[in-house]
Image (cartoon, rainbow, N blue to C red; front, side, top):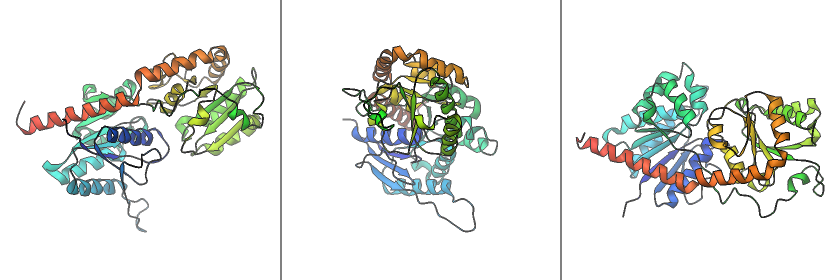
Length: 384
């Protein structure tokens, strides 16, 4: 029988794709018999209660503007590896986790676990390209035992940004919990109840969920809604919070669609609402993968957005994607696809089942970890 691995998972706990993927992957690996410990500044929202969790405490000093998070991560990894058997450290989001991994490996020397870094998007396309961060991040990624991305698009961007050979980067897609996100037995009007007319049927209700960072362009969603409403009485439910939450609210008021929107704020779970939507809409400037879109597809909800980044790899024929920034085209696509909503929804569910099952992707990660460990042991024995 193959022994279980000791795996440490390092991630950011907040709302966002990297934290969700990290915590759900940890859950899946633990379910397969591995000893998994999640390290973060707080327990991620979707981390299972039976997965070990250790809090990273970042010292605060009146001398410094920012706490030394990167060193705190490295030190915690060193301490963890010295008191229990860790085969693999899986770090999500390269900045500053790749540098933390490099430092921890240098401290531990020959006893260091294999360091694997998963890139998630803005750690490549935004922060990764920053001249103050790229040299160290490039060096740290080159020194890692493994590097992964969730899409072919992001692999190309990472190879160019950090000077890595594309074949050094493994593409392992993100995944979705098909039991949690799925079409309901019967779609009801619970979203309409948010607008006070649960018994009516006044047009499609669109859905959006994000961390409201500028790259998500949430205020632009209100422009899309206004244009759709010129044809059908659509409404929009938005879940999440972040820097552009207030701007999105202000844009709704400015366009006169505030009565047709509901901002629900941050929620740990929203699958019970998403599954009753008529469409999921996003206006992102870039998406390395599009986890929220995949969750909508699994729920049988069509996806409408811009043809950017890795999103076409995910959505396929399960929605409508248009040229980036073309608000009119996006609104027109939503209106035109209305009669096909059921068909698009079924296509999304099928695509999620065939390509993005959590058990299949977790197994891919497990195989990848074992392959890396086998290669490192062969090198240690002097085998070429």
